Image (tube, rainbow, N blue to C red; front, side, top):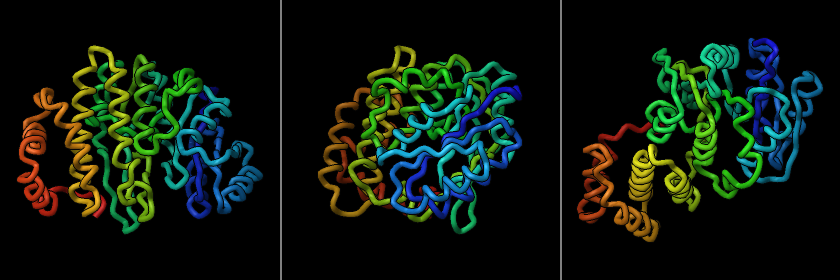
Length: 329
């Protein structure tokens, strides 16, 4: 196991202040046989200088530069430049605990898995931490089980950064447009879908060594825009069209749930989204025959959105304000 090289891909865009904290945590790994491929995605700040400084101090750091192409482009560029048998991802404004990759690799080898993954913790600037979920649960997953759990979000988080992938899984991703580069939101879910579709066995251990740092100016907290509204729906539609027979219902359910979530986001975003609400409503109308795939509560929501939207809007406004759990508040 000690001979296996892990390539850790760190995409960077204008993170000169956050990048040192990230790289310090990556270079502090107890598993020493790593290379850190840091990909500057056309930054306009001093991120490149930070990358060169770290490369001058630690030969495991490999700086890579490209014109701005988005995070998917940067990640795949990093994979192309990597030399390891295993691939991990860490976003340039996050950090990881020292034993994360040693533990993930140990599980991958012990359980003959192509993907080893774990939980994560969401760290807020005010000091709050939410764990997902830190139960210590350990589970082997075959391909179908893993893909169903990825689509439902029940156990497999859609992000790439709390996972270790065997590099052979990336062969199809490095050629063609398996993940369209113009998708800016939920692109990591689509890449995960492609990777888990290729993996025969995966291993999951629910502990939380990955620290997802939520910044007030992060993209996930930005106001709604066409990418935030329609990219998640587009991703689920791509998956639905691609899904084999044994995943078809899970993919349909994921698509409908995403349309419901998008509709809810538009309802609470204020005025100015009337046309988008109408478009998402029309998408849900087309899926009405499959609402029975949802749980009872979500089925009721979907039917109310489709059949009584005027009544549903004020009801959901009250529900959202007083009863819905808000991680970002």
